[in-house]
Image 1 (spheres, rainbow, N blue to C red):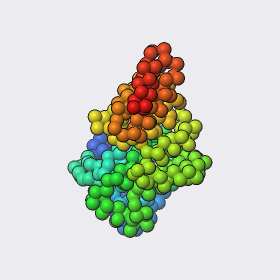
Image 2: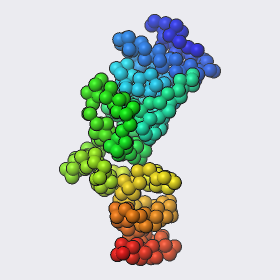
Image 3: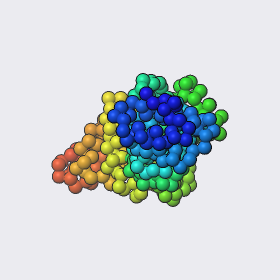
Image 4: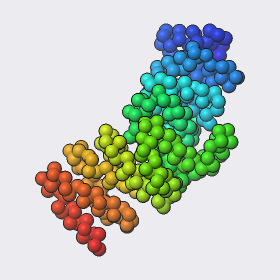
Length: 340
């Protein structure tokens, strides 16, 4: 196992590079090296160019171990961890490789089980991953890498806004109070998630859409349980044009959430899906959409029935669906249910 004694003084970077190149068991040693770097930075060591380079190379070579270990040893993202996340952000390759693991943690509300290769098993708040993401997207060089993950990052942040509004277990509250004191963050984590989402969109140069949503009070509306799904629909409408390259990916992701035995984030996901239905390739998504719309058409919730009706009306003018004979019956049934 590589420990601090294996990374002496000014030669630690060279030792790390040598291990990266020569040790067949290196993945098992990554956690110890990540902790060693973090400890040195905690001790007020100033990172030099070699340290930044090696942090990025470590993230590129072993992204999962890098992310899980850093979340374990510094979930509240102290100064040393912030230096490491910011260093990673300077490499598009490193960012692209660490984002899947960060997304896993963000999506696992309220806490994510983290396990490193050397046996460190713990639970960290999914907000810890959002803190790391916020630091990454502050660096302009991450833009291209982040762009590739827009569908999942967008939905993950929207879900986190909703969950942190409705479900705040005491352990998450306690974690967030510590983060708030250390970093001067908003008192409510849902507001921080909104700020992170806005920062993400601005990093992607979608400032006009951020302003348009602001002018319609969409960001504040996202923060209320009763109006969250309206705000999600508004966001989807305002962003439809910039999201054109991602509509199919977003739809597939939303359909996955809505197809669960116990659907996650059901009403907001339906609101988002309906707004982009007419942009989708019917051969890819519409066959999966129909059963979901039909199920929601029979819901006791008026909003679900309304959204399902809207979706069916969109599908009713889709040429492919008309040729297959689906929409006439479905739309008539929808109107009948609506009238009832």
